[in-house]
Figure 1 (cartoon, one colour):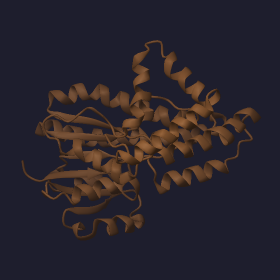
Figure 2: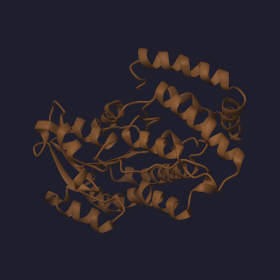
Figure 3: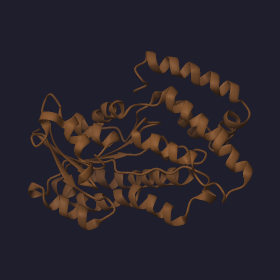
Length: 311
């Protein structure tokens, strides 16, 4: 099989940047990467990371996943509109008590995380079906499998992504189009760090004192400990993401990047009533904080020994 054209969204930083650069630097030169971002003024970090691959095996283009015209313009600018692999990475985060989130902000979150994916797939899937080939790789999250305290809207957007892809995968298979959901756990990025800094300053006046206390004194410190213990870098996620992107014949449908999160997501399937994971998370957070901290210390040691927990 010849060189494959890969379209990656959300490449100004983080996972999107790392995935685009890793594919562009493939030693076997199997990929031509179209690395896209909403704001081309933020291209400098990608240009530096791309190095000699820039304008060779990697080109940078503008694409706003919230705008159908922007998506169509980008795809139409490609020779024969050819995209062999779509890596849908563009996304935004949101944490905090639900009472402190506006409905309009949640709608904007869905506009990027869910409807951005829908727009891209609607534009590219018909061509892939006609060609009887293609691979759609979607950057989801373990929070698309298992909900998490104070991540209500974000998890909901990833649940929507998972349901959309799982449903569409059956039809896509009929046309020899592959679909893969990549499900990272915590990923340490500048975007994530900024999000936590903003969360610490969040106006919590719309919620009750106890919820505000839980968010500031329990959730935020615990989250930082988890990121420090088992968080992956974008490059580590890109390394694992590269595996299904490489695979032409039989790529996985779901691909968790962090082995330490697998027992947590497995709980959901172990109990059909749904009580097991909810009660387990409740006890870890509110009743067994010493055990939780001890477990994180063990995980931190294993994480370092096993190469950051990549699967």
